[in-house]
Length: 348
Image 1 (cartoon, rainbow, N blue to C red):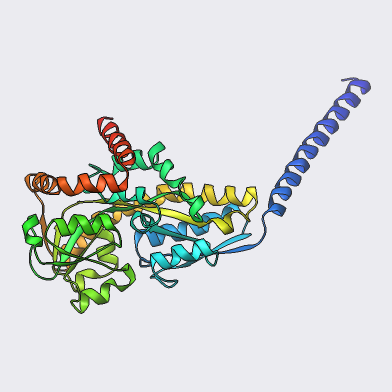
Image 2 (image 1 turned 90 degrees about the vertical axis):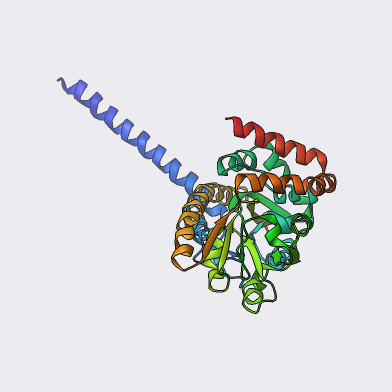
């Protein structure tokens, strides 16, 4: 190699190294620009379920993701077991801006947006796959888009799951066994109408008051997903469980619109990405939790029965006049659209 060519090679290497250094510096500047745009924030995230529940675990997963994605500048503090109030109280706190985040089932939301009542209609979804397809599709999004005018941001859906019935009086193998049972239901007109139509004495009540009501026999029974029945220790005062899978209720991951509008674009992106990642995690642990919960309940002496396919068909027929009336109250267009989406998802 000549002296001249060696010099050219050296200069070329120096130029390349300078270029790489410039690119790296630009990358650091870009990262710093994003990091500077994210302020140090404390986010209060309250929920009604037990910390040990699958959704409690998902809330902590979400908090970790927010911290990681924001380089520690956004910190989510979680408050489980109804520490910040009932679902309705936390929902109102978000609207008022005194709390940043929560998740609630769709039943309380139906009090302000009646179309959310569609998810309380019995036997709407055949399985979780169908539910996911509908909730993550256009019909699910349309419902979330009704919330900002009410002061809430609906980020996406988590899973509450298929609901099942427990009680302290006797086995429930058919709808007629519900006659006279004082059954706690969610504070929602659809749930009230359905269970009153099946012969129960449906009593609306906040979830945070439920265990005491069951323990004192203010109510005889309740209906919730299996993992909730386990982690809320309802089995201690409810010896009978019926696998009815009568309703699939989603959770909605909510943010205060008043708070959300004060976030930068980068901060909003962090929350949205963490929410997306937490959704897959939450659904996975929720479904695993239901399987484990059923085994746990059996081990702890709960007597388990199940509605037969024939009984479910009989219940559908019995409830047909009530469901037709509810459809008009919820909104025929919404009910038909969700039913249509569910049917399409069932085919795939």
